[in-house]
Length: 89
Image (cartoon, rainbow, N blue to C red; front, side, top):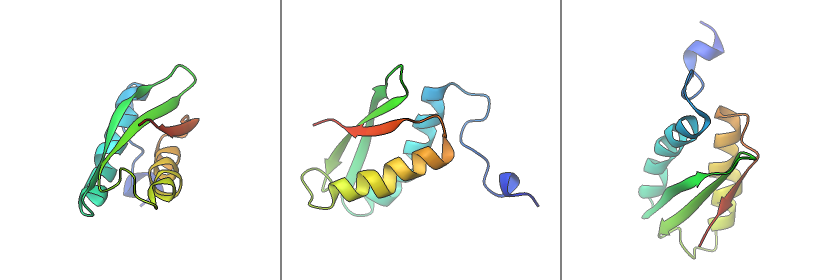
């Protein structure tokens, strides 16, 4: 079986925002398991994704690492057009 069939890219045939939203929903359970959460605020025309960390993630010393090595990495992997992910307070 091909890699694409094993793990299809998020939202084939959907809008950019729908694809991003789908991936955010996929990563939320991991954050919620640690008392945190993430809210998708929107996407900019340049394909910058804006999110708000919530719960235990808000103000956590590891929040920057969660953003870069977690949320942003996974989004860019599954939705290659993502330019960057920005946390908004």
